[in-house]
Length: 314
Length: 266
Figure 1 (cartoon, rainbow over the protein chains, first blue to last red):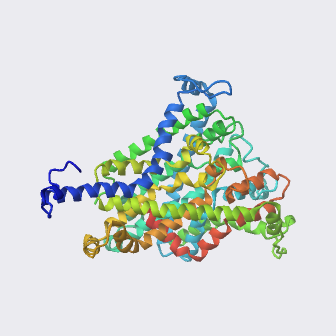
Figure 2 (tube, rainbow over the protein chains, first blue to last red):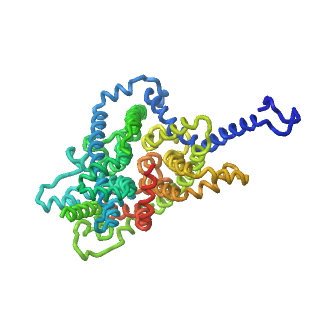
Figure 3 (spheres, rainbow over the protein chains, first blue to last red):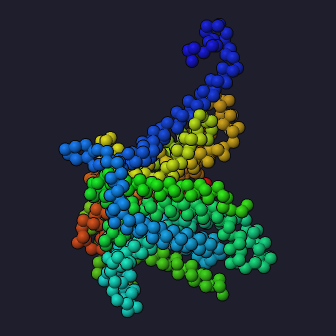
């Protein structure tokens, strides 16, 4: 500013020229804007953007040893990943987990929302029952379900015992363990997603339904042709959240199975935790994290493209 | 006919959904020998809670979680308000790019960056502190986004009126924008508190002492170390740790549901 051509002190003119006032104002907008953003930006860069870049960098390094620092190993960590059967198993588990939990929790959420939004008897009590799992910690919920699944005297065993079915170690056998975790996840998430559908349903005009009833449209037909298409933006929002959650929520695995038996229930983030903080192989954990980041970026891109194509007809 | 069938279906699902919690409540409030025997008139007891409370430093865990949640929310509110105001009302250079960079955190949450964030915390020398648990979450993209949307709906005339009276940027923010966004602050606060009260994996990684462990990690340590402890006590501890949030939810159910709704509409 010192070499500004209109220095009021030097020229003896008190009033600054309008052009310079405009310049000063827009300059102050930039400074104020960035100053307001600065505290949040520093934390975001430190704990989101920098770690993403650092993950990429560290995935090309070896683990440091007491005798020597980490060295550049190029694609070695990725080569090890491709040859690691557990990695492929974990990735497969996560795909099954996503394919199993996402459609089920979305469908149930929609069903719950339609019920709770309608004139069903005791709907506030129902809403309470559906939504309560959402406010409970996953870790606490997992403890309860662990007891539920316990072989011998858990509630599930008691019910199957009454029906005369043979005893089964639900969490201890490879065939059923992942399914058991999926049930817990659906139970926990459906009520959460219900809320978003409920909000969307309440914002729909009731006249739509009245008009359809006048024209003799059945409830199922009305739902299929009117309500469901109008709920499309909500479905997309819920879908993206469900996909992210299926790669983010692993608390119940820590409590219920620790990834076992034979890695049958290990999901990608849980495997990263195992590799990074139990075997302390942080270089490999960085490479695994990068895979997770690529998946999440693909989800973001998918959402962007879907949003672009206009998902609802209004 | 189909209506009646639907009501039955809805109630069946409702009972199914309430069952695990009802089961936990039964087990926690009855002596161990009744934990899987559902006889009406079984004696009620609070002994499981007393035993759990005595068996682990839950009082300390409660203090830690309360401090953690309050700390995170306080910083989040300040940082998100300032950043949201910048995005909503200041046409600064690079605003669009900066906003996109903020939104990255909606997809890539701190929850998945555990390896690198652990490295950072260790370099900062704050491992095993409440700050290490909270810092990655304090600049919340979700909060910034939510408040920006709200601030954008504030009429520009109100802003200008305050400016004419001589208020600076921060004073205008405080006197005009913040009061108008109150419901959004409440919504965000409830969502944030319940998220961080329940958060587990990251606190598990960065803490290793009673001094910094939140309730969720404390509960896990308690229920996994003491394999001999019977289920009644573990269940009591489980209900205890989720208790305050559960009670708050039951009391302010409407606000909770509306908050989650409001936070989701974007």
